[in-house]
Length: 362
Image (cartoon, rainbow, N blue to C red):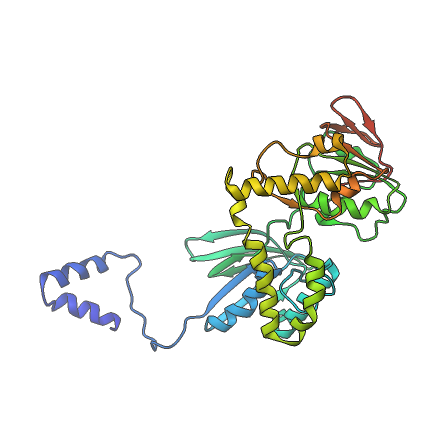
């Protein structure tokens, strides 16, 4: 219906209901106009994706394939893309960061998504403009600041893209090497160093066994107890992968069975998260026995580490090699809370001072 048709209907209306509805149209400011264009002509759409990780790459693959007449850009603050996904090319059960990074660079090249991605571009703000009915996005790049606009804004920044050190008193005065595990310094050499590892969450459990092998001393600060479970895929995960990966690499069908077998083992334990349920009680007994065995009968250490709350009340943390590392002669397990940092070390609330020579690590 052309715009003039509205006026014609108002002037020569058919019935009272029609005239009432058209009277409403006349109150719209600005004037309501029915556009004249072919029904199969798609309106141009611009979309901005913030982040070039797994979600950003997938958006770059799927959105252009699904949305007609799309103008897409992905702003990634780092100098390259990075994330992870299923693959038959992994060389070990737990792939390393460089191997994961190389895989996703291949995926980006395979689907030709780099043409959408602008690396070294940091989105600093995004505001919705009612007047323009668009997102107004400010971006910082090596060339300076600029503003972009889009009909749609997709945030794909991930949960751990902004590592933040805890705000301990004096931490800025510490003269040693200070680092967050999410912002690791690849040039740092931990060999023969005295290192403080603060925290017994997933990152602490992963980094401690590797550092313990090469450091001269590890001071491990852990405020809370935690259940340390076997690997998510089971104790025999590495052997299972070694026995099945070659068949998986040669056949998509075998690879699908391989993945489903791993997932079946994982999700069969879902009932263990329900407090006081039979699977939860069985899981607690099993993990308690496992932890004591890995602590080599060190009852004092077991008392400090094994929780008195049910499995699942806190995020379950698999930690291959973690408990064994705690029993090593060069590791000190410290439950006292940290009071402050000094220029050369850490002071706990009970007045004890520990002096890592180079690197508290989070």
